[in-house]
Length: 383
Image (cartoon, rainbow, N blue to C red):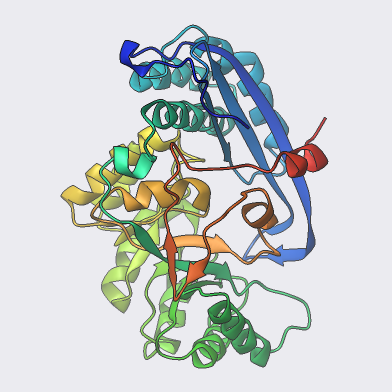
């Protein structure tokens, strides 16, 4: 889609939002992908576009919530879009505050409202970057040109043997990836440790291994797992403990095991991430801009994390995380999926940069630098 009209003049500092378009997209996956207490059968997202009087079109795609997608779309179209019509996209904070009001209904689905807010915030920022003809990572700081990249993989699959995990890691290396965030928490600590060990031995010493329990274990189980893999030099242990006492228990996992702990994707706001940091629960914060109010809120969290020497990560969403992570000094790995798990990143994004020796070069086009394939949107959009 054309991004800029020849008649645009950014010297006026106006980007008047005239229309919002919301396009839900759902693509079936070739097989079921199971984590500790969940499974994924589809890859879904929401393409959001804002049209401005000056001819700039800001767009992005956000999210991976299959069951809740319809509610997010409904909130976008019926509660939030009208709040930014007539506003100046350059006034990003005002636009963000206007959409925050959609989260105030205590009887509504606040998570869905925050995801809807994130969609609009992402599109607004794209319009700003396009108007200024600059990629967002440079607008926000431009600290890195490329990022180390790891794959989210190692899912539970029926009849999968230990040797299969070693082969999977080798395939990820052949794709040009530098590491793997491996799924655990769905079996006993010993059984999952055996799976991780097989993967680590198959990958070799130069391939980073993280583990992600998705809040699958009690404290004692998380500690037991860590003892079984203490010689593997895991890069991080993500969401090791149940949600209902996670901050305290993650702090204990850090203290007892010495393995760096990652969390933040389950938080909706900077306040939630603040509490993780202040309770000494994490070494990495993987707050998700698409789940947590958009890049405006993510950048606030990144500044907070910097104050406490916490490294920023980002849960999935490479189409936005690349620019966010590359813009700051305290960032780590970018996360992607295998094409079977996230076909959208590989077919919706045209002219996608390749992975090269464990690295990913950040797109240099204006805004998010996304060139979306309209044929894919048309084929998989939800009518």
